[in-house]
Amino acid sequence: MGRSAVTSPMSATKTLTSHSPRTQACYPNPANQILKLPDATACDIGHTIYVINYHGSNQMLVRDFDNGVVKTLVANRVLKCVLRLNTTTAGKWVTVTRILSS
Image (cartoon, rainbow, N blue to C red; front, side, top):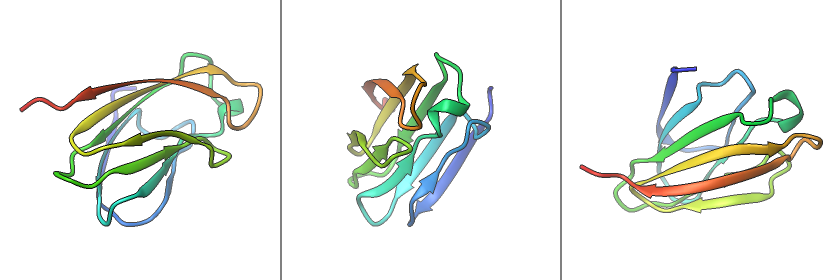
């Protein structure tokens, strides 16, 4: 659970699985790259993923497994995604965004 992954540069869609590291540090270049959350039916309620966008200016998109937009994550932000409903592949993800501090 303490594993993390760094995707730098992030230049294509990255799809997570239920076994992917729970912390994803991303450097989207170019902007608007997509990180897809795992199939919710393969995850337990409460499954938590942290997405860090450490690019200085580019935003990225966080989508559910069915490509629904969960959040547009602007530069220098951390997004906490918590699974609240896992009866469909998309699931229901609740999010909280924080600013990266130096």
